[in-house]
Image (cartoon, rainbow, N blue to C red; front, side):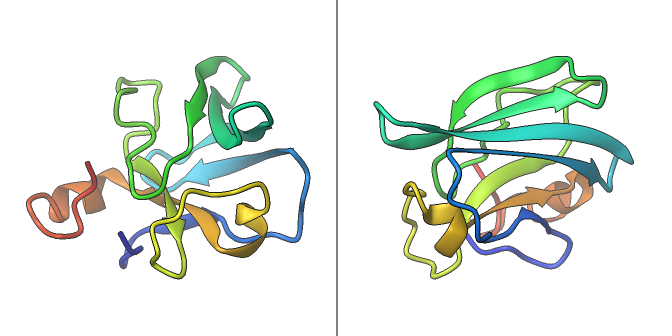
Length: 127
């Protein structure tokens, strides 16, 4: 899955090698800030993603980050980001991010709700 027009890269490859990466992002389709946290699971050897409201209330914790899968698809409702979040391999090899993946070839993408609706039933649809 490749990012398309209208998608927002909200965690691009970074120079960091920390096991925990935290940031806030303002999502364009709701105009609200959400808190995000990536944490490296040393035992399982994978990244997890947490999301909180702007006030810090948890929306989800510990979702395993896999490439080309809508990470927040099970989490819907008025308090949740309405679009879809997924991890992209910028070299299009569909590799799940390794420990240094967000420093090198992986990035998180946010696809706003309107873009999700416009690509439904096409090759750009996320499942």
